[in-house]
Length: 325
Image (cartoon, rainbow, N blue to C red):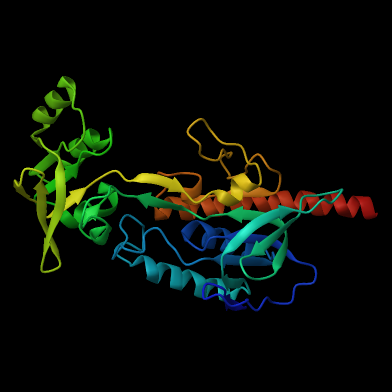
């Protein structure tokens, strides 16, 4: 196994692979690492290139992952990388600048160009680069993200159960989020902020026991490294112990669209159920293709992609053997 680093501007040490890799996985989160694990166990030569920017890095723990419930995201990735090392997977701490198709007559192939370094030749590419959460520009919000400013009730709701919770009205889905959070706490407030609530919205919130607070939010209030509530533009303080919001989900998909992979009407890459994109030989898994995927879902998607991808490689191997016979 080789580990190298281009994130500090140095050129990585690339392991000797004169015949290239069967698969290069771009992205070392749960989806990418699980895809690499299954492929390595299928005796494929695999490299994982990871830029070290996991979406869930701010979170202290994961929830809802059988046997990993409460484990820190960093510990999961460390454990996964150690497992891959045992199978001889090359782990490169680097950024991929672009992926270039290699014109061959009989099968797909790609050069995966590392930023500031050389290229890796691969028969197949798995893009598992995830997404980033775009947050409203409110003072104090970004600093608390993943701690007591939260997104997913299923990921974090249990840890803040029975506490005073707020939902920031920056997205049409905030109403449903507030209705959902009522499952975890009897004290949920929808902070309307810039959201235009309909009469039906208000009726549903009232029926569910969710209070609505009008007025734009000015900032979140933090003292002693804990969120204490929010302050409205008119100076009103609304005490809360955690605030939920819908971020603007931005997929890290430049590599995919540099390859002209097809998108859906919302702009997300289109794949089949196994993660196969419209470009032969290119696969996309995890949050880069599915914004709803949690860690456990992303890991499963990585495994499913690896199964299908290995069958794809077997078909190609058989075709080549027949041609050579």
